[in-house]
Image (cartoon, rainbow, N blue to C red; front, side, top):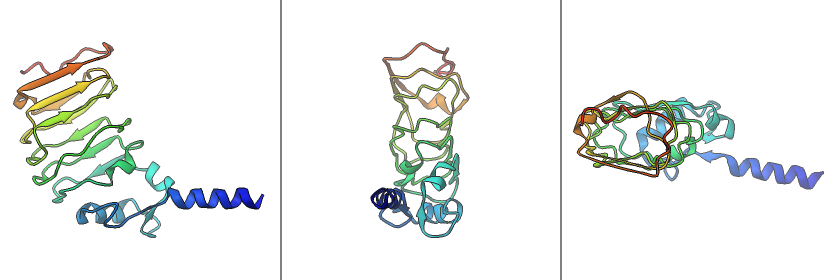
Length: 173
């Protein structure tokens, strides 16, 4: 019994994520995590604290690096990033619950928005004023959701899609 309790305690300790410059190098994002997600104030995120986060709003805060966002990929449904002109792109791979993404005026994001593998019937994406000019999706299904700014898309790469829903996204191209 003592072995099982020790094993459980060590697994629990390994699950905690330190809120530090290694895991969250962007100081603004790190402070947001400390102020809004680290509920018990111990500068560590427990599984419960991580799982409870469905929405992160970093709009206009001057965030440049989202390393650490991957800890929330299983619970996050809405991600507000607008008006962070120096924000670098990050991989959306594995964000299985995400239904809303706002990248408006993220002018350093890069030129490609890769939504490969997303299999959601409804999704909102906002990219007006961003640097994105290419949309890529390999796998999943095209969504029937809200968009803003897709008139700037010049290249579309679609492959291996599941025809589950009609696609309104590229009606303005």
